[in-house]
Length: 271
Image (cartoon, rainbow, N blue to C red; front, side, top):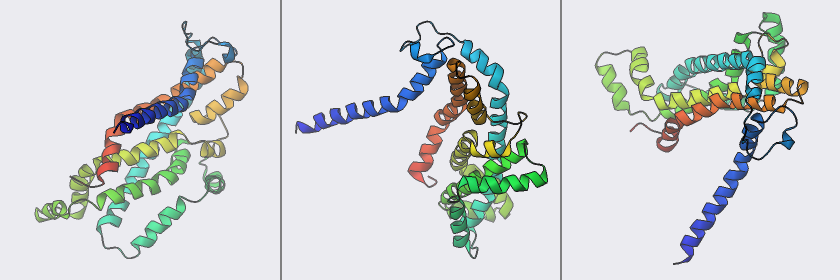
């Protein structure tokens, strides 16, 4: 009887230690960003006299890259959900022949190495004039967002009670209106979840950014940090400040949408 509390305390201690280990890089990133310019190894464990010069430098040098990443990520979310939502609804609710083969094809696309897709897109983009464009990066990032969103949305839409859809049809709603006025509102949590992960895919993309951009005109923050680190190895506070700024949008979205994501993961159905 006395062993259970001891096991609980041990599990708590182990969990705290593991959490501290995982969060240490984040702590060190924030700490280094608040140190004066120079070697961050000479800084203290806590910035008692924080220096925000690194953030000023990061915003001046990398601000436009942050805006580029935001535009590309939001564009990928809109395009991915716009294509995935009707496709997922059709696969979930309509008796389509070959639906399982379509799903298998969607899963197979997730297994294709990104470098293969990037190389193929480079040749096509070069012919179409889509290199160094927002549209080109949005389309490229959507190649990962659309299949993932279809899988998430189809799984959720299959569990929508048929009575809700039948009631809308009895009231005279057509298939398009049922989809727009009933299915989409009911699937709000799944849409937010799919949109969140699509945003994270696009926001953290490095491979497509490296392959499909060759100038400074359109350059996401991931590529900006990569090149910034090579050119400013003595300004680690600015580099770390850029990393902190790049982490903020993703962190805010995760904290804001965690309840929606948890609802989809826990229920998997409409209650």
